[in-house]
Length: 401
Image 1 (cartoon, rainbow, N blue to C red):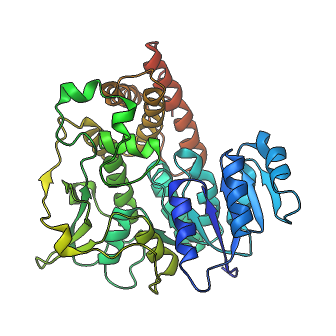
Image 2 (cartoon, rainbow, N blue to C red):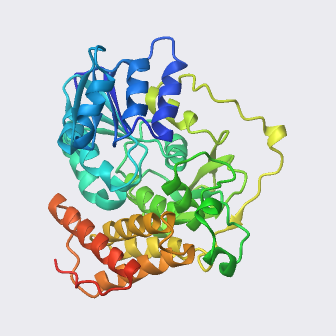
């Protein structure tokens, strides 16, 4: 890794914008090689004019001309398409890549950065959920450094011994404890949740997040995906990864050691804190976030996670227990179901039913291993087709290896 620059994949999203705010707080911020977005030309152009990266990339190639017009006269190179995302992530001038693209779209450019041996700051869960075994194997082969940014996994990373390398089982650790806020429906009954509206589902009590992630938090699929992510990042069996509900979102996760010690990372619920840790690691840098006031925070409470009211958490555990490409199937089916819910074509209570039906169909066939990219992408497509069929009420297809 010979470069010095930073690439932000998904710069217009909430995590990407928070990362740019962290850079604003530095006296000598890391230079930017590229900022990328899916197709929000106006937002990407605005950020590029302010932060002056070398390259602006729009994943939707049909928006290239609009972005080129918006950045005319700036000297910023404009490119687009999925291949362009992978190219900027692997560029020789780049040292670090922040992967903050929501959904499966983040897999290929993130994997490109890993294969190029970059320092990869992983803020999106999907690459590890879809292809965790492949992802970590490629990192080992290339020498890429993986630094988790997701607040829970970053908290665990901070509580592990100095020099810990992701993908290896940490010494002396008994279990990992992921905390969950419980989302907006923590106290709702199953019956009330079933007919919850998109507006209610995205109204998270503690965090400001995009719509898809907010819905995942409301269903607790977000925590299920995090269990799978933690399984790969920290090489721990899913049975040793506990989920507890912590409504205050002050303790971001904990590590239990076999000597009885329980180490926790605390902080305000602000993504700028884990971003600053990841961007500066192993040094500490200002985040621009407020310091947690323990007295003002008051009581910190913890509750068991209820997999009866929140079946998505159990479905995620079942997928990682099944292994192979079952987590790929889970993730794809969830993305389709959440999209349908946000569009008003599916009830909130049906999200888990769609996912369960696709997982059941996959279990009735032959699941390929998640060690080859082609197999992962093929199962992602298969699961999406079958989830769309489940949403529409039509019959899906049999899973074939």
